[in-house]
Structure formats: structure tokens, C-alpha cells
Image 1 (tube, rainbow, N blue to C red):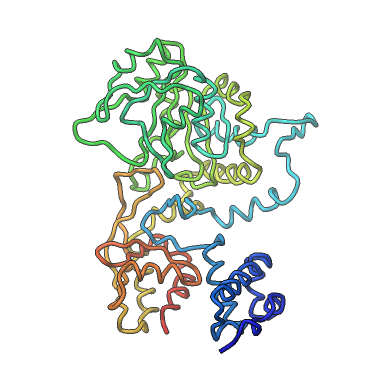
Image 2 (image 1 turned 180 degrees about the horizontal axis):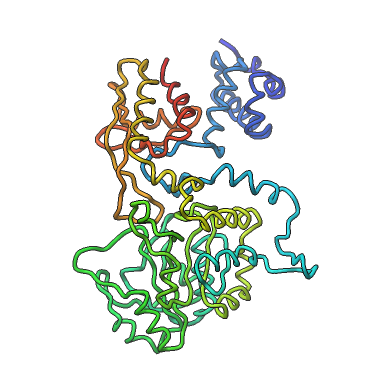
Length: 452
């Protein structure tokens, strides 16, 4: 058995060719620290295992450990297409390449080329948003929660804002609307009930209100004996009182999704058409762009928002603005969107194509040992990330089982592949939804790692 004095020096291990890939991927300091941690454990135990003197064994353990601590591509086969924990909407590689020169060189981010002086950071993307939504003005911040916080802080700091009890939502990470409102400096006035809120409920507190807010439930829905105040009704009440009205759409989409036989979702255009003064929505969900929060609405109100000192703290960077603008440009030709927006291409994919994907994967996995069982089964996918929580779309999934492993153990095995495969566990099987099976060839090669 090796002894403590036989432990190889850290620098000797780092110079070994087995560590070249790990150092390149994770960085020399991270690799060095992990080697030291492994050897510190051996010294504490006063025991050196056989592998403790082998560079290749160290490399395997270091890579396995650091693999869990690094950003890495994954296959999202969960059946939740816009998955908050897995990066939300996919970006188009061609769009990314199109913006590469902008974000890797100096650009007119906040510079007026005609006047030769400082300009408005949002001006270019604002013009495009106004053309697409019909709004008088627009601005962009780093996410939609920030957009709503900024609106509340600008028009209701130290004042009251009524919100229907049925819209006091909790979003991802346990962040709740009442807490966000408190941080914005305004006071929440709860009106109505969980399942039924009427215009008269808002009218009863109208004189106390500094603005009126409607929030798209996004992550849940209320059915049965229920009613809500429409955007049009809210706009009329706000106009009567001479205060701003705001609708937070959450996901937000700039096109009518029903044109592709998808469930309907309100658009900023339709809400502005109802007379609402300000609309907030995300850029990285149904829009299919990068994480951002978008505010569109009345010119004088957006101008006040831009003057709020919080706007600088929450503003979007050049990468966000460049990608968002390039994505919005695609919306000027909505008929071709599924060809260019990966999210829409995934949502509109036909079952015949999914079946072809599934059969190709099953054929590739035909040499899996007997304990493994793979089948193609009908399933349902959800859009996810706060969009259409009560609606699903037909899909197909591979189901994967192992005779001696639980479904959770199978799911863990898939997560430990060179490119982690993330599925969902149901009915003691792992379901791999094929709408996320792209690039299919790369997924096939990854799953073949299960073959001995």
C-alpha cells in the first residue's frame, strides 16, 4: 500500500498530460485546489489508496468533481420548454454570430453619431419596440421583475397601489409580488378575493391609489367560479382618477400564437390598445431573446422612468441590447419567425418529426444491455417559465428504465453523462421529451455512453 510520503507533488500532477483538458476547461487554480483537497483528506485519514499515486486517477476524480461546479451545456428533455433553471429560451446561433462584431468591438451603445456626443442607451431598441407594439416610448432593464419594480418606484413610492388578491403571485425562487412592491417603496392595497375581483373593488379604493396594477398570473391559473378586472376596465378607472395604469404581462409575446395553433397569450399591443399606460414583459421567455425586462407605454411616463436613478442600476448592457434588437428585427417578418427563433421552432414542431427523432434514437440505442428498456410514448409538453400554466402541447418522449435501478437513479446516471441529460421522473420511469432533443446527433452520441 502507498504511504503518505508517496503522494505525488501537486505541480507534478498538474504537469501530467492527463490534466491538460481539466486545466483548460476549469482553470489551473480550481484544479490545483481540488488536488490539494483530495490529498488533504488522505493525510487526515492517514491512508493513501492505491489510486492516490496515479495521475490518471486524480484527473478522473478532479474532473468529476469540478464538472458539477462549472457552467456546462445540457439537454433539456424535461418537457418544460422555457425552463428557468436551464437557461430559458434558446438563442439562435446565427443571431449570436450576427451580433458578435457588435459586442466584441466598440459600438455606439450610448453615443449619438449625428451629434457627436452622448446619446440615449435605449434609443435604437426603443425605436424598434415602438414600431412593433405601437407604443409611444419604451425602455429596457435587466429583467421583468426589475421593470415592474422601476414602474412602481417611479410612480408610487411612499404611496398605495391596489392589486387583486388573485394576482399576488410568487415567481421563481420564492420571490413574491408583495415583497417586490415593498422593496419598490410602495404600499400594497389588496382588493377583491382570490377567485373573484370586480371593478367596484378598485373603485372603492381609487382615491387612495397612486397607480393601478394588473399582473398576469403566469405561473398558475384560477378556474371555476371566478372573475377578474380586465385591462380595459382598469385603464378606464385609472383615467377617471388621473393616475397611471400598468399591466405586467410576465412572459409577453409580440405575435398572436394562435397563428401556429398554439394557445393564445395577451400581447403588449392588445393591452396598450385597451388603454393601459404602461406594459412590462420579459425578453427571454416567449419573445425568445436574451434576459431583459421591457417597458412600453406613454411617452411622458417612460421619460419619468428613465430619469429614475434606479434605471441606471437596472439598465441593460450592450450584449443584451444588441441581441434583443437583432431578435426584435426578426419580428418585423412574423411569417418566418419559426425559421429563426429556436423557441418557436421547438413549439411548432410536428409530431411526425418528433417520431422520426425518437425512432432514430431508439435505433441508435439498440445495443443497450438487457437491463435497460427504451420506449417511445405520447406525452405533453408545457411552454413553462410563467407562460400558459394551464396549457400543454402534444409531444413524444423516450421513456427509460433499468431493471435494477430506480427512476431517480436512472435520472442521476443521465445527469452524469459528458453532456448532462435532464429528464423528468414519472410513473417510475425517466421521460425524455423529444421537443428538446436537439442537436439530435449530439444527444445520440451522449446517450451512447450508456452502452458498455
